Length: 160
Image (cartoon, rainbow, N blue to C red; front, side):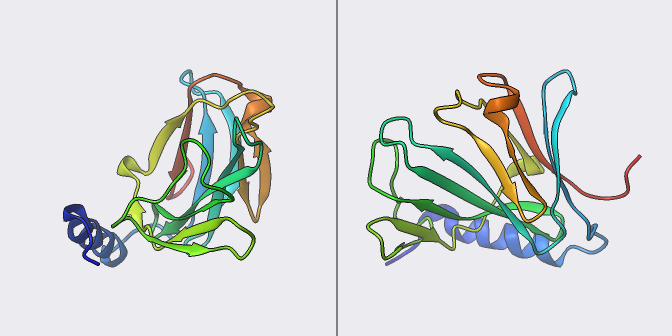
């Protein structure tokens, strides 16, 4: 099976990020509102990861997208989907789909750098319960800012 057109470019970008000199070793995952109000701050050192989890709005099971701090950059590495429910699925050429042994599947080796090391998420209600989960803790964004624009970012370097 051949990877899609963007696969080679993604691999080159990821390699460049990993080999770039002088990148920070520490990392902090932050979630903030447009006015700068910080909702969450989780320690994610280089080489460690975190997941964004939420409950599927129809089926109710937990879905997770997992990221890693690679050389100071946010990279989507894998996703767990317990079912082939509405809105879920694997795109050929974007990672490898593997059974989780319980009727669901993991999409492994996605390895997509997130542009600007940040993105916007609108957390759903507590029924959906969008949350950030890392070794340093778990925070429910739905409890703190349901339906708001929340910027999730990997910050590196020395604090100001």
